[in-house]
Length: 517
Image 1 (cartoon, rainbow, N blue to C red):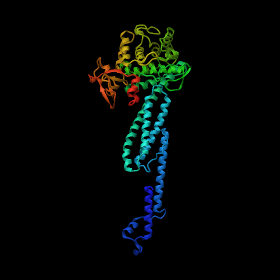
Image 2 (image 1 turned 120 degrees about the horizontal axis):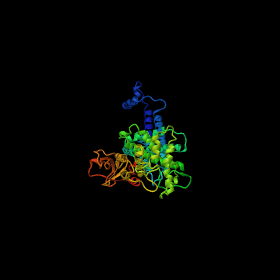
Image 3 (image 1 turned 45 degrees about the vertical axis):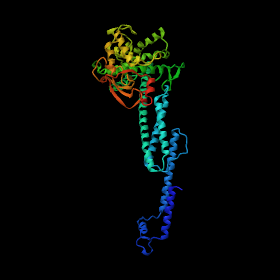
């Protein structure tokens, strides 16, 4: 017999005894009144006709039982949504309001995680393992634990309140992890959308369909805003271009799992490179008075300059062996073709045609397609050539991995020193430092950090190697509870030794900072 049933039986017994005593209300015959204390107790009770008091309590008990059944059903639904096997557990007979609120919060978090799971599945990333997917799986496991804790709650309200404190900590941590997932996925969607938009615009331009400069200008403006806000500069591609390319005419994108034609794949390849060039230009042009009033058009030139590469067969772009003479000539034709395609734009400015045609010209006359020298190459085209070389070195290619940003900058400066590139424009790359914002680096003591700002101290020859770093791990590789900011220009004893590869970032940071991978 339950506690509630025992209570009901006692109430019924008291009621039966009261009826036998035949207690009268005040104002009746005092001779028939019962004991004074019992009479006063009954007199204080309000008159209840229909339904009587026992019936009211019984209905309340039935409602509570129904409430428990509903909670059991809700928990079963949550378990099924989380992929948990049905178990013979049930909720306590009655949850405190605090416990009930936490159960509802867990349900909402699980619903959000189901939505995120669908978004992760749609990306179909072919890495060894997407860190966001692993992060999501662990977060679902945390919600699973939280729901099982509720199932194990005792009936005692005081015990429930004590357990709710630990449950709140778990759900708070889950909420923080969900926020990181949402933010990282939003950034991924934003980058993918921009890439697809630029690729589609380049396809329209190459195919001769009507197109205006305005959509290119809108992308350029957004890139400039990110540069002003000190956004990260990442050298990456949304697919593994070092993976073998299928032989079929139609093949799956190595990033999104959708069907792409050969032309679309090439357009995405070109769009990736053009976006990196545009981001580099946006960061080194803004401080210079020479470019004030021309920033947007310069970034537009970076977005369009390589459109001629859409005429290069995809087999050449993914070839790992050295190109033959004929293949090199086919690649070199893209500069002249790009100028012809750019000229199709309505009221196309001359500087855009020149940028598309001349970004592979070299100051010593060894470039292509026209072998121009020195003053025959305009200032914008010279700057574009510098950024094009730097961006290409810092990104992966089928025949080589990506170079470290420090190596890419040093090699670009070396080409300028040899008279191939403009020296003044090449030195502007030092504004990025050897390790641009967003680069994950290893310090000499083994600590790992994220570059969050350029050098803050007085500029000198050592400045590019000493940016501001947010330390994420200690020298033993253990994650820090909170990032520690370190201005290397003020720390003589600490320095950066290298940037980390994608594989190293996944191994060291994937468990705690998946949004940085």
